[in-house]
Amino acid sequence: MSDRTARAPSPSDMSVVVPTRDRPDRLAACLDALIALTSPPGEIIVIDSASAAPTAVAAAVARGTRLVRCDRPGASRARNAGWQTATGSIVAFVDDDVRVEPEWAERLCAPFADAEVVLVTGGVVAGRPIDGVAGDLRPVAVTDDVARGAFDRTFRGNVGASANLAVRRRTLEAVGGFDELLGAGARFRAAEDIDLFDRALAHGGGWHANDAVGLHDPWRDRRALLRLELAYGLGYGVRLSKVLRVDRRRGAALAGYELRRLGRDLVQDLRAAYALGVLSRLGWSAATLLGVARGLRTQVRHGHLARD
Image 1: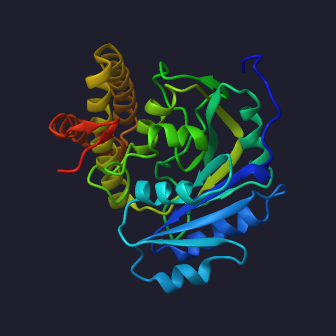
Image 2 (image 1 turned 135 degrees about the vertical axis):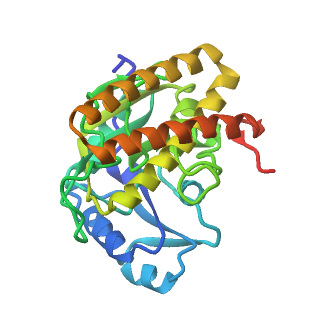
């Protein structure tokens, strides 16, 4: 951190936004963990992202938690609706299949004592497999390989995800929040978080707090994991197309980094005869190329992809 320090915001200055869609059981477990925090946040806002069974979602919402309904699906749209109605100076985002640990709130708030920090990512680790999912499947959305500390927009590796994230509200206002054409339920189905990082980090620095832990319980089977890799690749390719337009050198550096990472992981999976890993890497690569092509054909206005 820099020496431009101030009082760290209290968890009571934090609004927590939980987007959800037709997953009441996982939502209930997520909210139970948030309510049990040693330092409770100022408010918890559940955004129902056009659930087909809204009464089941409403039944899972705990007392004292605010519920907002979005009539159109999309995780980015839901998160935007959440922070726009939030009252805290810090807005945290937690996915409905993540269970935070008891001291999560104060640990996520602490890095904001540095006035230059505009966003903080928390650690996401694999929990227990549920719904009969095999425990040997590759976990997704985990950040147990991310080193604690500062990062900026020049960093090329994994810095965290929107499953466990806090952002200054004024920064969200400055960049217009999440791009609603990226992310689950949108046209380009992923990479909404790293796209937000690209834009937010133009306003300050980031910090990864790997001690602000959320547990992500694996629940996808092999077919669902492959579909997810295709979504990740498509979203990443579209995000890369956005970076290439504003900073071609940085875009080329990001592409080179991902190619090297992909090659290394593919060799490891081939040596281990890990068929799911090989299929995932190849699917991700093909989807990324498609994403770049589709992204370059989509207009960008004020940092956001424009609807046709």
